[in-house]
Length: 179
Image 1 (tube, rainbow, N blue to C red):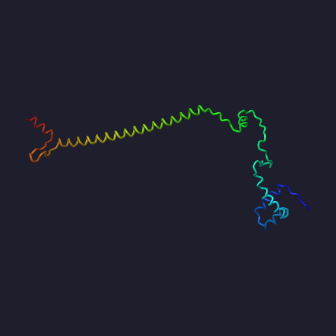
Image 2: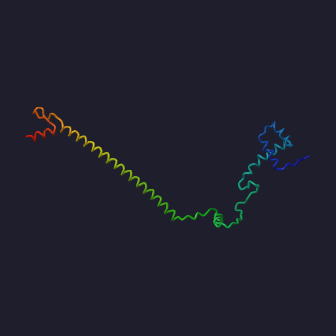
Image 3: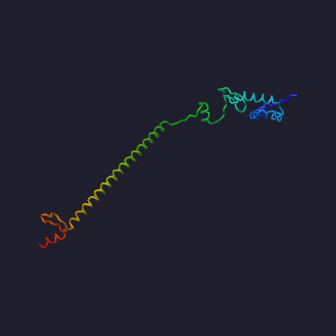
C-alpha cells in the first residue's frame, strides 16, 4: 500500500532530517510513517534543488519566473508617479540657476566669515602686543622715575677726591634761597 505525501510534508521531513545522525534517522522515519530510503531520497532532492529557489527572476512567493521587460499596467492619477515609472527614475526638476546661486552665495559667505575671523585674530594679536609694549615701557619709566627721585631726595657722594657731595634737593633749594 503506497501513501502519497504532498510536497510540503516531504520538504518538512527533509529539512528536519538534515541534522539527524544515521542512527536517529531510522527512528525519525518510523515516527513520520515513511521509510528511511524515502527520507534519504527527499533530503537528496532538497539539496539538489534548493539553489533554484534563489535563482534570479523567480518570484519567491509563487515559484514562477517573470520575463524581463514584462509589461505591467499601473492605474493612478498621480502624474509624477506616472512620469517616474515611464522614465524609470524620479525626475529631479532641480532649478540649476538657484542651485548655482545658493552654492556660490554660501561659499562666498563662508570665505567672508573666515576672512573676518582672520582679521579679528590679527587685530586682537596686534592690540595685545601693543598693550604689552606700553605696559613694559610704563614700568620701565616708573622704575626710572623712582630711581631719580631717590637720588634727588637722599644724601650721597658725587666725587670723593674733589669733596663733592649730594644733598636732598629740598635742602639745596632752601640753602640757595637763604643766600
